[in-house]
Image (cartoon, rainbow, N blue to C red):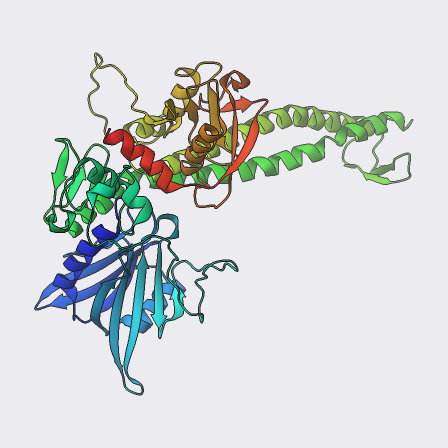
Length: 525
């Protein structure tokens, strides 16, 4: 994670300069995970944004409201409005050197006088949270959790910070640093990105000036430029940096997401109609027995009957406008149509299910950090998505940029969309390479370029399959794995859909610190 304790320290300095001691005029919720506090300072408007969900969870200031929808009516936004509107922002501080910001508000109550309330913003990856406190008692939280073995965040209990065994560091003694991750493993506030950089560049961190920087290739960012490359963009403030990476890219994907949601509604409605037709067709299968019963009844087939009885003396109603022979013929005709219909309907239900899964996969791939939007658009266009396409250079080679990790001297590829999944599974792989995928959910194909999968390599690769899956918010995530030779393409389905034999399952917990350390080691190698 690019945001560490030192990043938070400089972010707080920026917030204090802009909005300290100002009155909260209004609080709005502009997205499912985004809350905005409105301030005014001598006619100038300031908006304090809280983004809760990954990627890029953060708090920052904008000078205009990015009003993407103010129709949320959750209990949490109701409590924020009730408890903080008209209050004054009295203080902003950091818990130790951690990724925790404490906003202290004072409100004047007619009965109780001055009341102090706190808003604790925890930037902790999958555990991001915004917590309302009064007298250190939890009033409400964006993410509530109960755990009988560690801290809980539920109303009416005493608030506790995340426990840590790391120490505070006020001065860096470079003579003690014997490993790239020495600082991040032992001291609060050091991300793996910063720890690795300081191992190679022994700078005076405490005198380094703030220079918000975005790596335009990888989309990584930090509060000063530690990227040894030219493809960077600098910003005047950290808030401008966050505004750029949070608002600008997301607007690019809204049309795609709306198209996917619209298609999912159509697909599910179509399947419901097909399932109704299948139910009726299966009922008509029984008409064969009625036809046989009529012929076996021994009655005159040219006579008309309102009903007959079967061999168990059960009443079978007939259409009295027709003769027995005509009733039998109509029963056999409906039966034969139903047999043909069942096959047709069943095939279409399967195709509809496949299309639904493809749309869900695309929805998931769009949610990943830095998705390859061009490759995703290609697949969406094949499903009817309309987009203004740029003129294609036919001489340009169609290259695929893959997310690649190197762990224990082994290359691991991660597909971030169906095109990449198809490529690494069917074109880049060798039959003895190993393949991993989350069990029962959308996710990336992970290819390990090795025929020897040690326990350590297996667990790391499985963590990647878990991280790049729709189940990445779970604590325990099941991952299926096998060798490429045990996979087969399924005829009639797109290439990333495979059948799998002779596979095993491993359950993993994602270790973001380990994954990030491998990423940073590769970047700064």
